[in-house]
Length: 284
Image 1 (cartoon, rainbow, N blue to C red):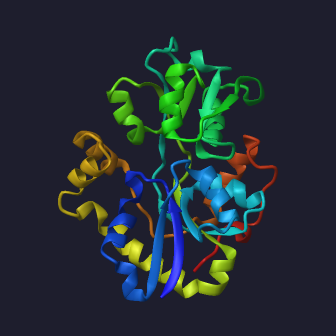
Image 2: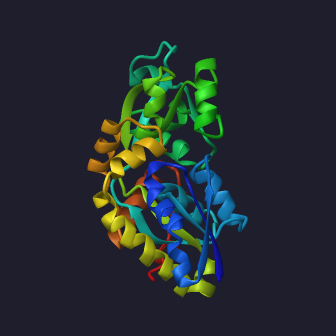
């Protein structure tokens, strides 16, 4: 049996992986797929890929593109979720900040440098006409739990994270939402280390076939909204709203989309240069 290690955030987006692992779907292809939760998100997974702690990851598009350009020896093999990610701009309930303008020049709490919360702070700054060099400051808080503890105690001024994941903390009065900022590209992709692709391409194809069969039918699973609500402690109406706006994909990023993403990241000074499509994308 071939051992493959995969990482992802422990959030509702990745429930299809849990279902296939629960059902031992990969065992039928003689694959022992082991899932690892990364509460620190994309930056933590990029480090894990570099250190060969995992072989593949379900990861934010902008984060892995940046890290591949920075030397991470991986390739994107497929879009996972093609709809944008809706990032909430959160402040502590007890803070004095009321509008997005109040946050100009304040400290963004981020999980780590190179993470989605870090990179999306630049997208949010551009959206609001801020000067990224003058109006962005950062405070590293490691993960969502760090923000829950830190923001009410003045560690960081605002925090960007996926709106439905943080909704329970808005409902219980920990956070307030000031604004929302969607990614201008498909939000999650599947990335694999080059070494694994070279040695186990057929295994990776089998994994994709199984997860793609599941995501194609995911919304049609009976009572899937209730399962998500219970498993991730979210209100049923929030889950139903999320399901209504979220679309999975079984295709890879095309050249036009990759060029558009790189142009945007370059404009934001997130990447130092653009690279060829083949340096980022691997077609199975």
